[in-house]
Length: 81
Image 1: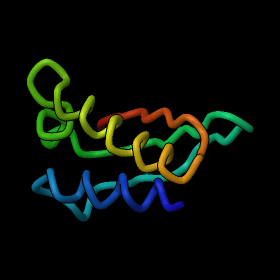
Image 2: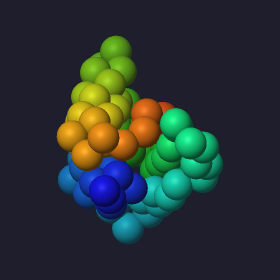
Image 3: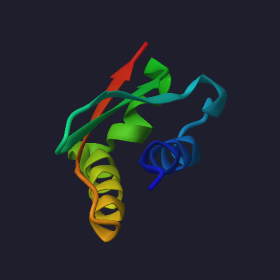
């Protein structure tokens, strides 16, 4: 189960500055994995989307992948720099 790699692939497909994207697992408990996504401020709109629709879809896809492999709950934090 490679949730970080899946998240990174999706985010890099959405942004203009793919080289500036950083995705890493920052916290892992027994039942929750937290993935931190850092993108440039210029690309925040592309990752968040209007009304948060793209970020919601990203979270749904990654959580569905985790569920398919009977994995833990996934939390994704998206920040800009």
